[in-house]
Length: 393
Ligand SMILES: CCCCC/C=C/C(=O)SCCNC(=O)CCNC(=O)[C@H](O)C(C)(C)COP(=O)(O)OP(=O)(O)OC[C@H]1O[C@@H](n2cnc3c(N)ncnc32)[C@H](O)[C@@H]1OP(=O)(O)O
Image (cartoon, rainbow, N blue to C red; front, side):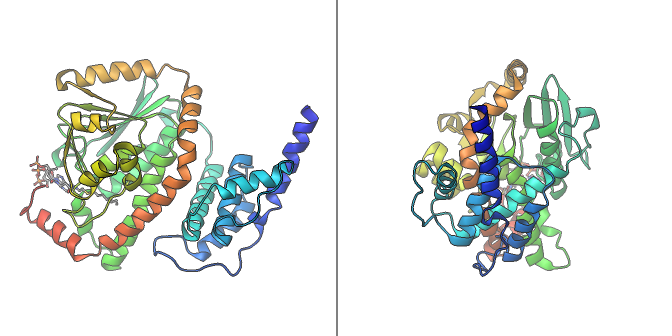
């Protein structure tokens, strides 16, 4: 039996590696939305796969195969192989599971996946103990590890924990480190009376040499990387929402496993007011969590939810009285952090993995749309209005 399994595994691997996965892509569709990966990026990624230092495993190879086929040939259009043709049937199933995903989105997902594989095969060690953790560049983010919990704390209370460009980079680095450290659970929370007031609107005033277009391009790339880290985060991720939450700090909650909120918290996504559009995969996760009309009220009309309303709609797991919030929540998290970490990781994988490709595609599309929005008059006027303090949301 073991011999048969071994032979099957070897045939399976060589079957995948002999697939078009390694054939240089020629004559493919070029163009598509500006944010999505170019043909050149895709070709580079196809070449990069051959240079991976570690075998990514059959599951990932299968994903690469399916994305390659979707990116080059579009939705699965060949007859299903027979029951006994195990390898080709499994490959067919993987391709077919991508449904009507566009060639451009598949190309982007392929490029993203290869870039994550390259990054992880270059990382020096699988475990980065907390003591070796690279500290954030600024004190606007504080990262600590204790009792099996890594806590990432937004620490700009005078600005309601608005997210600067540096903070996005620091959060990405903190999540990457937390995914490899010894903690069982990772928490995002805020200092002071706010959880987070969303994107720091003054980020838009630091125009690079390339002007507005370049600013929008690099902000969209940063947004995509930032949200990808939440999509891919492998351990239980908990938001401890210590006060009002605005914008991107609300939208990414759909990518957390558990959200605890004080009864003082509120949840506000004023994208239309700002001439912007949803991000953080909320255009997909919010309708799924709360139904399309409740999601539309938040994402289109900027309806602000109380903590109780957000809980009733499934965005928040549980609401606690403000007076006992910190004590109750941390006691509970400490108890959870003692559960077997591998079991929690694996359970999260089962719950989330089948959604990942979809979430990456949604993230790429939302970032691409926002890139255009940030160059619109509606958005410029809204930001100018905030900066001149004419408008408060
Ligand atoms: C690259 C990735 C991009 C991702 C795209 C993300 C999109 C979003 O997140 S959209 C949401 C953006 N956020 C907002 O529009 C909120 C703007 N802020 C406000 O409306 C208010 O400040 C408030 C409701 C959050 C709080 O009001 P209030 O309690 O009256 O406090 P102050 O307004 O006096 O705020 C104190 C201090 O903090 C500054 N500040 C607060 N939020 C932001 C912010 N998002 N960006 C920049 N600055 C912010 C505010 O200007 C005050 O500063 P000082 O006047 O210097 O004291």
